[in-house]
Length: 248
Ligand code: MGP
Ligand code: SAH
Figure: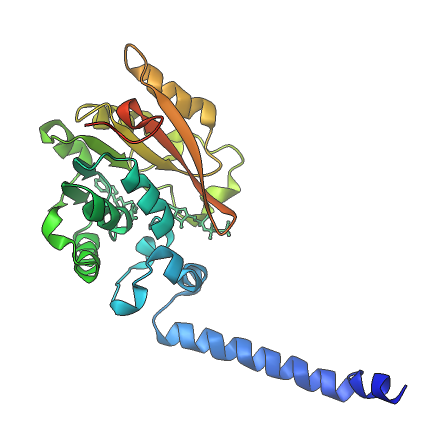
């Protein structure tokens, strides 16, 4: 009876506990603002080691990079499926995918419209010691596509920001900077071996329709990508990348 009583928090004690919990929360928030982490980014910063296992070695990000980078485990999966040849990373961002392709493939061409992203990707590739396997290009994928050669084209375009998930059935028309059909068609100028990383709420019927843009239709395989049991995105593998590793 005595011990039961002593384990029971008195009103005063539980108030104290609540206060110290709140203090801890504020402390955590202070730490993230001190690091220049905006409230939008905080959630992704907490997942930083899932995004880059070598985060502490000097990885650099910007806001769009934080919410767009492909988690490392998924980027490894994409690289394993790419067959080891030359990969064109058409929207390379801060380099999450580019780095893993460079670790496993002969060569990578990494394209981004934003010069700052290319700087960040170069820094991040150096952290992983793979910068020599990558050609970094500041440019518009749509202008460059017809002059590019590669075994695989990798597409992880902007999804319109973190609010993408509020849409019940995400249409390919919502991809940026052009709709999914235009992005896919531009990639087909390079190769039919296309890997596309898409929102988990994407309209899968539309994704299948992309394979019909070719005659005969391309093989297609759709994969769900989880990190720690949390569905992060969908990958569509087309052409030779469907159903296993690409044979070169
Ligand atoms: P999320 O859904 O914003 O995060 O992004 P999370 O932690 O799953 O959110 P929760 O609220 O559901 O718990 C999940 C993953 O999608 C990110 O880690 C990125 O890899 C990818 N992603 C998100 N956005 C907004 C983009 C984007 O615009 N472009 C690309 N290429 N990938 C994105
Ligand atoms: N897979 C990347 C994230 C890509 S986010 C990673 O893991 O880090 C999408 C990127 O597309 C953004 O960095 C954005 O700057 C870039 N982008 C937008 N329009 C583009 C265009 N027309 N050509 C090339 N890159 C573009």
